[in-house]
Image 1 (cartoon, one colour):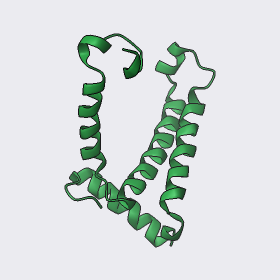
Image 2 (cartoon, helix red, strand yellow; image 1 turned 180 degrees about the horizontal axis):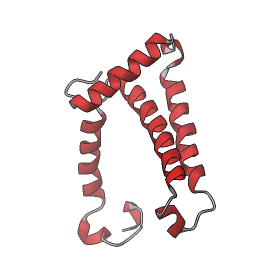
Image 3 (cartoon, helix red, strand yellow; image 1 turned 45 degrees about the vertical axis):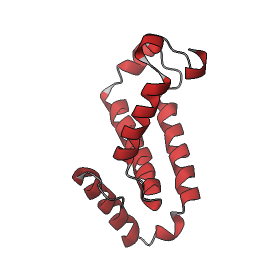
Length: 120
């Protein structure tokens, strides 16, 4: 577990580790397998929105919203385990990434513009 991790994230990370340990699944949780799990679960998130209009994607019915919550949780758990495997604090890394993105996407060039930073 990464040092400085928030209490809620730390509690979740410990619960996920305990869940895997109780089932003797750590042996399968290599960084490669965890990265593949992230990709697979993220694809399941995308699948929920396939063929929906923009409007439909914004207003999911309760059962689809619950399914989305499950798939997002699966994706998040894999991300958390992968980060933990490499001692990365996801909250801290996300804050650092926001700083980097702010430099790549200054407000005066990117506000209301959906272009990649090298096209601004």
